[in-house]
Amino acid sequence: MSEIKQATVVLSEAAGPGFHTIVADAEAPLDAAPGQWGAFHTELPNPEKPGQNLRRAWSFSELDGRRFRLFVATVGPCTRWLADRRPGDPLPFTGPWGARFRLDERDGPAAFFAVGSGISPVAAMIDACVARGRPARLLWETSAPSMGARLAAWRAAGVEVQVGPELEPSGPGLWWFAGDGPRLDQVVGDAPPERVERFYTPRPVARAGA
Ligand SMILES: Cc1cc2nc3c(=O)[nH]c(=O)nc-3n(C[C@H](O)[C@H](O)[C@H](O)COP(=O)(O)OP(=O)(O)OC[C@H]3O[C@@H](n4cnc5c(N)ncnc54)[C@H](O)[C@@H]3O)c2cc1C
Image (cartoon, rainbow, N blue to C red):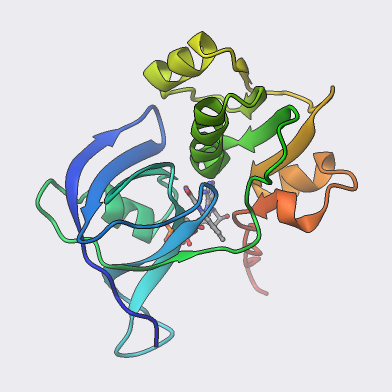
């Protein structure tokens, strides 16, 4: 079984309609690569596995030694539980996980297409591009933009940033994609699996009488 690590919430705030951000300090440096994620253990019982609690995958949206940021769409029980955490609350997790969705070591232009909360791992990757002086471009498809200060800092560092409700990835660069699975399926083309991070696929809705 994976080692459970402890983190403590230091900031918890709404990040635009339907989104929430958490900053937490782990007990030890995370040693995570941009694009990686943690499996966070909530206090909510798992109805399908008696005796266990629900866990969810959330990407590290910002990384700085022991400190990390999460950025989540508040869509269900676990994200509502997360949004209720307050400074000082514990946030147990395992990880970092994810050997696949990573920046490569090239220097050529990088381009990112993020849908909704897909901005979360992409943000950490853009920070890394900025730190390395690698040209980067972001298309963030969202109807609830936030992260104003961070977007401004990226723009000031030369990142080309486009934010809007309906965007299409096109143009030069090596593309990475993250967020809503069905939407990504419409745009990824023949991008290799290691450059596509599908967060979720909507669960089938039970029909009345079915
Ligand atoms: C590797 C990986 C990294 C992820 N990183 C993030 C992240 O950084 N931020 C984040 O918000 N989510 C992320 N997700 C998705 C996340 O793990 C959960 O799906 C989400 O938090 C739902 O938990 P819940 O219990 O609140 O809702 P659930 O009851 O599990 O889901 C309710 C419904 O909401 C929809 N849904 C699920 N996730 C999302 C979402 N992100 N945006 C819009 N609708 C959704 C689905 O249709 C689902 O049926 C990631 C998933 C993976 C696999």
